[in-house]
Structures are given as structure tokens and as C-alpha cells.
Image 1 (cartoon, one colour):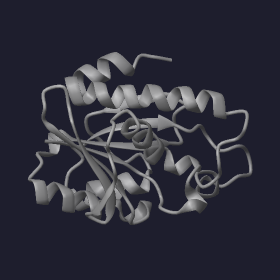
Image 2 (tube, one colour; image 1 turned 90 degrees about the vertical axis):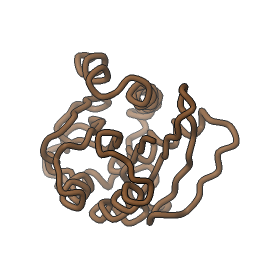
Image 3 (cartoon, helix red, strand yellow; image 1 turned 180 degrees about the vertical axis):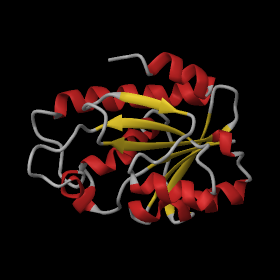
Image 4 (cartoon, rainbow, N blue to C red; image 1 turned 30 degrees about the vertical axis):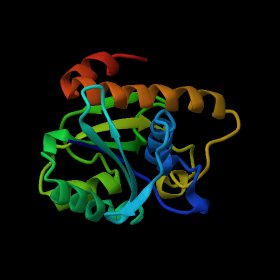
Length: 189
């Protein structure tokens, strides 16, 4: 079994914000499977789907708010006894240019508070993640305010393309693992 976690904040207020890019990627991925209806469990919304081999993949969006995402992820990992190498976190990244994707197999949170809470709760930095670049905040805008801003109208066309590519990247990780995913996606501009 594999677990893919899309990070974000629950509620209409946050739906299209930069911080919710993990939710948006998982929404795109879920739309590719017919007959999926989300269930509530593990302090989150999830669907379970089958990969090409017929194995179960759990797609989870924690509803604990970003800074408490570890609670949701830890519950799902413990309940299903999912090996940590089978967990992928999808999150926003201020340090990457807008729509740039980067897989990592381990490391620090890079300041992403949801990822930080997951790493602390699980007690390891050896968790795979797909970072989605949201770009740096413009001058005079605080990073905490910037991540809670909606994507601009000008950004929308590129955002839609990048969300589809991100869902493709997650699917590739499900099928091929983290090393091949890093090799395929990290060099793209």
C-alpha cells in the first residue's frame, strides 16, 4: 500500500490559495479515477484507488490545518501499517520558481510548516515529497500572507498545466518510486 498526502488548509476561504497546492494536485489525481467518493477518517478526507499492479493507494488530504498535518498522516500510517518509504507528501515551496516541481527522498522541511509537523510526528526526515514551486513573495509581502493568497488570473493557465503535470508526476512515483521520479522530473525546467 502507498500513501500520497496533499497538504493544504480546509474550507472555502483557502481553496485556491498557494498553500493549498497539495490539495489541488490530489484533486486533479482523484478526477482521473471514476467512482471515487471521498471518505472522512484520519482527520482528513481520503479516497483509495488501485495502481497498475492492483495495489491500494490511499490519497489523503488532512483537514487539521497545515501546521497539524502530522496527526492525520501518522494515523493513516499506523492504521494501515504503511512503510515510510511508501509515503509521498505533496506541498508548496516558496523557494522554487512558480510551477517548478522537485522530488526529494528525504531532508528538512525547508520551512514548510505542514511538512515540518509530519517529519516531527513521524520522527524522521526520510519521507519522500514532491515540492510544487509557488515562487517567492513580491517585495513587502510577508511569506505567511503570500502563501494564503489566491493564484492570480495571470497565473491560472500555467497553474492548470502544472497541476496536470504534478498529478502525472505523482502517478509516476506510484508506479516507479522516488529515485526514478527524481531522475525524470527534477531536471525539467
